[in-house]
Image (cartoon, rainbow, N blue to C red; front, side, top):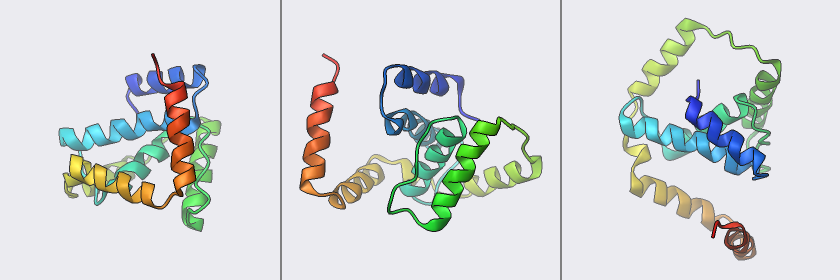
Length: 145
């Protein structure tokens, strides 16, 4: 369950008309913080990000899966969005305890500064120069003064 503060920040982003990816960023940030606090770990930075995105979808952020996602990821995203709409909050205690136990065994290095910067570099390298330039210009335009 996301923290109250995270939900409020995401709602604020939505009110301000920001993109779903920006709203979801709050959940990813929360997940990274959890790993840094030692609440649990993650096998990789990618896993930490995907847990955050899943939480965002379940909290109601209209975030579609990326076009390059695998079929399984797309189906999971669909399930997460459906779960948000249905509003069912029933969880299997055994399952959530098992998930938490499995994550606790994972390393904490996935949220280190070097791991995050390595992930950002890899993600940026996959994009075209034009795409990166466009988003940089948009960021400059929408940056708070």
